[in-house]
Image (cartoon, rainbow, N blue to C red; front, side):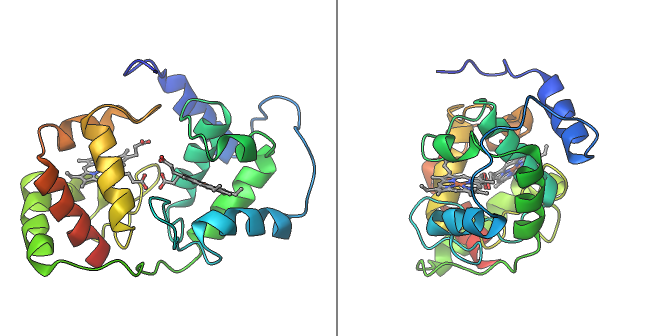
Amino acid sequence: MIAKGWWPPAVGLAATLLFAGSFRIGPALAQGGSFAEKLELCGACHGEDGNSKMEKIPSLAGQPAFFILNQLFLMREGVRNVEAMAPIVKDLKDDDLDKLSKHYAAQQPKRSEEKLDRALAKRGGEVLEERRCTSCHLRTLAGQDQVPRISKQRIDYLIMSLKSYRDTQRPGADTAMSAPIAGASDADIEALAHYLWSH
Ligand code: HEC
Ligand code: HEC
């Protein structure tokens, strides 16, 4: 279990420099596979066009490139420890991270086939205003820089990730989400997820 808040701001800084292409971390790791092969691998879980059809796996389409890059970087360094992703990211070079981020940022986000509960979505809009989520995720909910897009994301993934921020169980999570989601009930989180998916 990774203690909350241990992640030094320097990691974010390193990612910034990496993004700018002026910083190289470690030697190039495994070389294997073309870019197309890597995309195929990602697509097996995240959907061919970056829109996930799989339960609790996030869509990547339309995420800010910097958010994707930052998360891939954190996963490769083992800070955000995602079991399913660990064997995949460990072999990615800085250049791969950069290309993959830009690729998915340019894809069109599409809703999953999950079922909308209109009453919940309506309530979710109120929770969103009360908790001022748009101050960081923007009115469009499309995110910016290291703040992710939350519109049209999968409902099941939104519920899972919001609960993990609330319960401080997301490894390597930026503390930015701690206060906004503190004390939210499960019902509020479900409502938020239905609202976000439908917007
Ligand atoms: C075996 C399935 C699998 C494969 C293959 C896979 N991923 Fe993932 N990925 C996941 C899961 C599961 C999560 C989220 C888990 C969590 O937060 O608990 C995730 C999370 C992510 C995230 C964080 C997104 C967010 O919204 O927080 C990014 C970025 C990502 N993956 C990119 C990639 C890329 C790029 C590839 C190909 C190089 C890839 N993934 C291949 C399963 C996979
Ligand atoms: C102070 C700025 C800020 C506010 C306010 C904020 N967020 Fe976030 N949010 C972030 C940042 C930064 C991240 C990425 C954190 C990380 O690296 O784990 C994030 C991540 C998320 C994620 C994870 C998405 C993914 O793809 O993994 C969800 C869902 C989310 N926020 C929803 C919300 C909701 C709903 C609210 C209102 C209750 C909210 N946020 C308020 C900054 C904010």
